[in-house]
Length: 145
Image 1 (tube, rainbow, N blue to C red):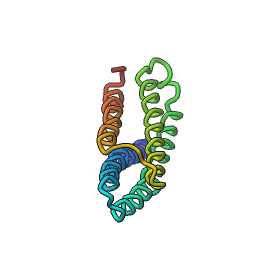
Image 2 (image 1 turned 180 degrees about the vertical axis):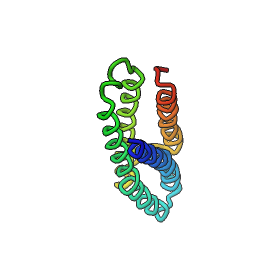
Image 3 (image 1 turned 60 degrees about the horizontal axis):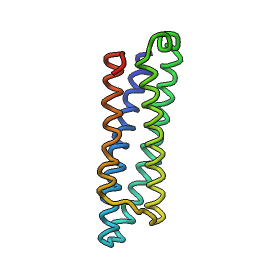
């Protein structure tokens, strides 16, 4: 089970790296669009698509699959007096939602339909940080915040 946990942690790290990087690409893509830089915009479309489909989504699926494996293995201990796990799973669901919102924004950029500013994406980029901090605290302390 320690191998499963190790690979789960690596997948989570990879997923978070992509969750931090894709919205940063949106910042630069929005700036390129505002400046009328068509070449830059096309380059960002490719980068965003490859990151989302080639790294972000596969790492999410691996993290969720291995996390589910760990959860099932310790089912009775996690769901009898483990409020921290319920909170963590709620945060994971929010993170999955954030992942899909990133995908929706990526598709808007791909169709040249983005209406958001670089400032919006700068703020949007910070949201997973709060989830990461909360999850690390929950897992480390194994008690609610």
